[in-house]
Amino acid sequence: MKFIEGHLKVHSESLALRSKRNEILSSNIANAGTPNFKAKDLDFTEMLNNKMGFGEVNTSNQRHFKMTFGPNEQGVKFRQNVTPSKDGNTVELHVEQMQFSENVMRYQSSLEFLNRKISGLMSAIKGE
Image (cartoon, rainbow, N blue to C red; front, side, top):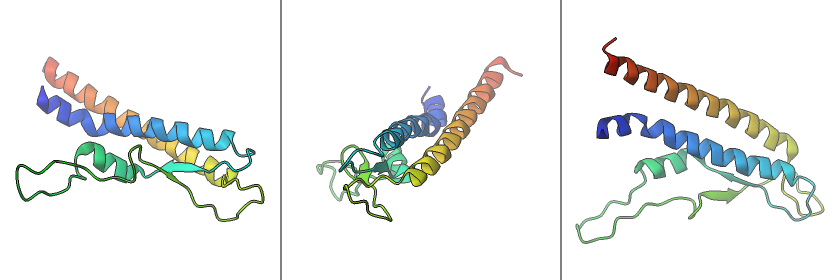
């Protein structure tokens, strides 16, 4: 059972992070006209490495606490805008829309990879 979990974990974690990023980006787009709203985003690669355990801090003694590092507790960072606005809003609509559409395509790719892995495992179980 651990083998199957390990086989699918990266894709399931990827889907969860892509979904979270879609929510953040859609919130940015929805608040494009809100004064003093600060655009947010997450570093997908860094967060995936964190979730997969690649971000663990090395310890020299087994009594040391195991911990991981990341951008912050939620993994969300504020985005720097290129052209500042007078009302303090950092959302640049064209950037957010591009990031959102790219993230949706990557979400669909991750979903397709996961579907193929599951299909392959089902074929192996059935002996096909």
